Length: 50
Image 1 (cartoon, one colour):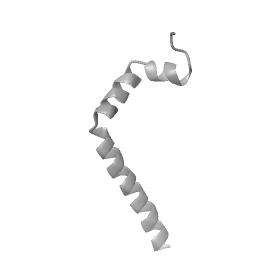
Image 2 (tube, one colour):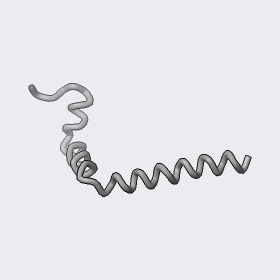
Image 3 (cartoon, rainbow, N blue to C red):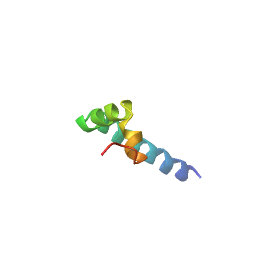
Image 4 (cartoon, helix red, strand yellow):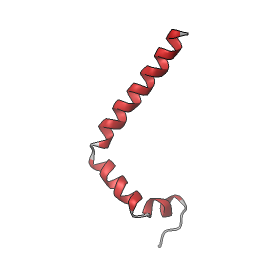
């Protein structure tokens, strides 16, 4: 059982490192502003203009 918990914990830690690395990229900043403006929801729902 301990090995299963270790594997899950390792996967979560690895995902956290990836998320933290991505959080410092220009793409993350662009995605954040895109979401804050509401454009991301419009894109996801195909409700944009044009």
